Image 1: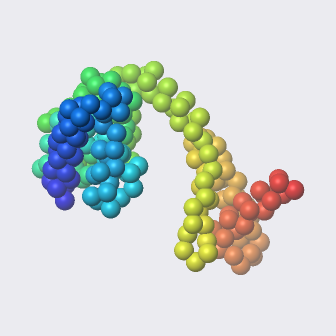
Image 2: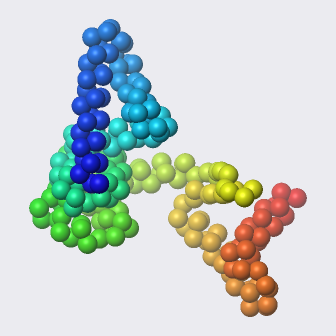
Length: 212
């Protein structure tokens, strides 16, 4: 599975290069060259254009900037998801710094340790190395992430829905702690609802009270 993912990444990049060359030869303006390539891959994979573009971006990073991670993926020493995490956690670094993270974590000196890590540990180590290399880039990334805080709603089976809040970690932990305390208090008083039910009901009641 990992080797197939590595092959797909290489083929995706080859296809991107060929399509860009064809567009340039056809006289497509430079600003528009490359548009739609990710969508073509998405169409072939029966996926959304957004995911197709994201896959192509990951493939470009692996093939063009992270040779050690690509090699580890090719030989099945990391999973496709693990490789994606390394790409994601180095996306804001310079090409040179990204190469350092790639070599330290997935190169000969680091690959054995990488194989024993959980996904959470991989992210933490990658972030730690990134901070050592470019603390400003890491700080700027955190600021950008905070600006993207939001609440979204998507459907779930059986007339249910998922209400999701993307929050800074301190705020998220604080919100969860309030709901957890409410649930524990209610359960201790003999409330027959499950802990999760009390937390959900408390959230809805709090929002309804605020709206009123």
